[in-house]
Length: 113
Image (spheres, rainbow, N blue to C red):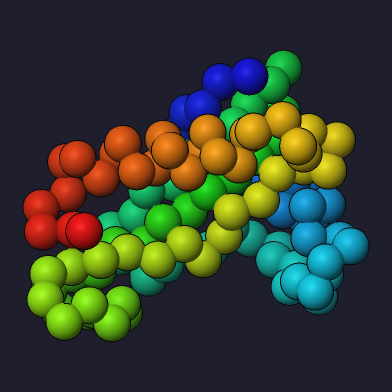
């Protein structure tokens, strides 16, 4: 398993991973037919891939001075609209690894806490 930045060639696999991960949860109706693009906002979009199949996903949307979504009193923040792990690969720490990789990516983001 490797964690890499999302690329459009993985869209179908990304969608499958997300829908299967949410299938038996309260999010089961939240089905996407295209990967969200977040209206051009800065993002960190990572996937966990095994044998060229997406088995985990995390998208993090970053605040900008122009469009702040988080409720921090000062500075810029971020939020996670999606984090999911394919059911066949859950309980192996993949979600945590994706989260930690996303946090590491913040080091290049000014003013984000």
